[in-house]
Length: 133
Picture 1 (tube, rainbow, N blue to C red):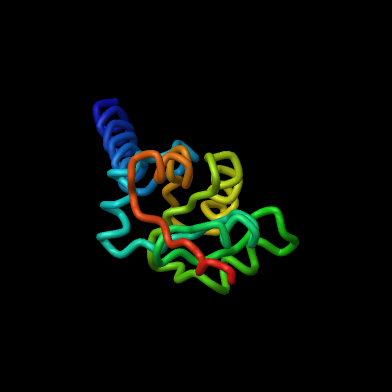
Picture 2: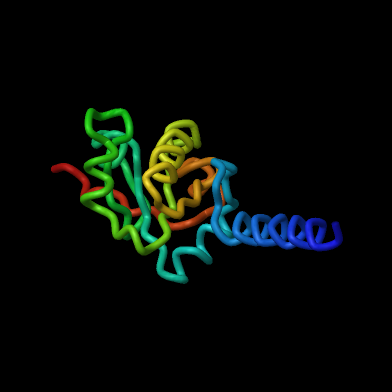
């Protein structure tokens, strides 16, 4: 009986630790946490439309539109599955959808809370397109 209780406790502890290390839900992370992940080598994925991208995006981001057909295949082709991914959209709804799909495909994903809107509001840098003549 003691062995069963001890084994159960160990398994629960291991499960808790693995969940703390690798995110399994679409709970968004704050800007500071996203910056840390990026500094640690995470990839940055913008899942908005091309028109939104052209209005400005985060430096170093890759664009793969989540609402476009074949999103997951395109994302898999663009991303390194061995590296974590920070995903963002305008405000958080589409990035949550993308994060769910990417996690199901085996990626470690962090969803930026509030998207690029929160990023800009915090005074963080955004790459803007060249002004049109």
